[in-house]
Structures are given as structure tokens and as C-alpha cells.
Image 1 (spheres, helix red, strand yellow):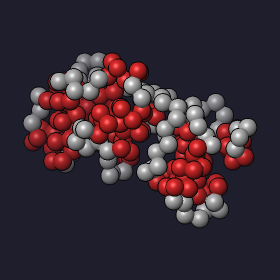
Image 2 (cartoon, helix red, strand yellow; image 1 turned 90 degrees about the horizontal axis):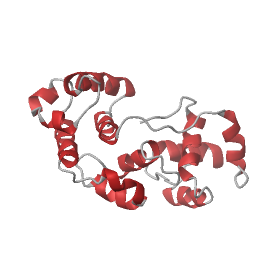
Image 3 (spheres, helix red, strand yellow; image 1 turned 180 degrees about the vertical axis):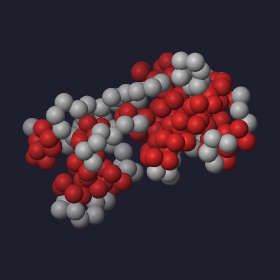
Image 4 (cartoon, helix red, strand yellow; image 1 turned 90 degrees about the vertical axis):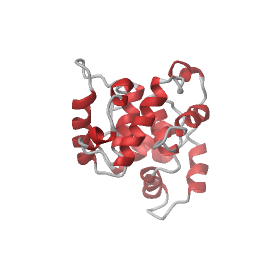
Length: 196
């Protein structure tokens, strides 16, 4: 707030709301795959059907249970063939310990992104959302996020289009809290807190 006139106005508007992590790593990434390129409402519907099939008695979702389902079973809950493949690949990476969940706290952001994008269906944007919403990394600037670019456009450039280079330059001033600034810019567009 001390360094940025826009943040000085935005932050007080949203009270005590904060970024919050929820779920475990596997579930968070599975939800992000389910929700790709469909509405929030449709994603929730598919997720509920998927969870009903794979969750254990405590409502936890384990990679091994996903691997126990074939493509037709995954399709039956509303997943496309491609998303079924992506979820199976995600489950395989976790079950075979090809992702180093226990080491993530000690790894830098780029190393985690590199590990995650090796999983089919997870691109840089999904990995950055995971860093922000699951690992609670404070200094992520997701330059591929349309909401971030729109928030910058609306709040800093009188709604003129903003390039990734301009966003990157502006974001330098928010370091080491670029995730936080991003979250407030999202909130400026939609007062409902963003969660993944």
C-alpha cells in the first residue's frame, strides 16, 4: 500500500478476506483439470460426480482410486476423453512419486512449475494458480491470466489493453507480494473471493 496508489485504494475495500489454501495437492490439481474450459457451475457438477465415484469414506480423493478407473468410468461422470487421460496421468505422477510433494516447501517456484507442467493437462497457468492457492507462495505473477491483465487495465490504464510486458513491469513494484496484488486485482473485478 505504501508503494502503490492503486493498491492503497483497493486493499481496504476488501476487509479481512485473505488467500486461503484448501484441500490437498492432488485434489487441488484434479479440480483444476476438471474445471478447464468449462463454466464454474458445470465444473462443480462434474467434480461432484467424479468425487462421488473416487472419494473414500472421509471424502478424500487418492491417486490410486483414480487409477482404478478406466476411461469409460471417468467419461460416465461427465469428463471428456482428454480430461480422463489428464486425470489418469496426474494420478500416475502422484502414485509413482514423480512429483516431490514433501520437498516443495524447499523448492523455488520455477522448479515446482517445471515439475507440474510435466503432467499432461497442466500448463504454466495451472501451475501458477497452484502456487498461489495451494502452496500460498506470495510472489507469483501469472502473466497468462486474463483476469490479472484486465484488472491492471481497469485499475491502472483506464481500461486500455495491457501487454504482458507492461504487466510484468508494473508487477515488479509489487514484489515480494505479487500474488497478493494479483488477488486484489481479481477482487476488484469480482468481489467474490477467487479460490481453486
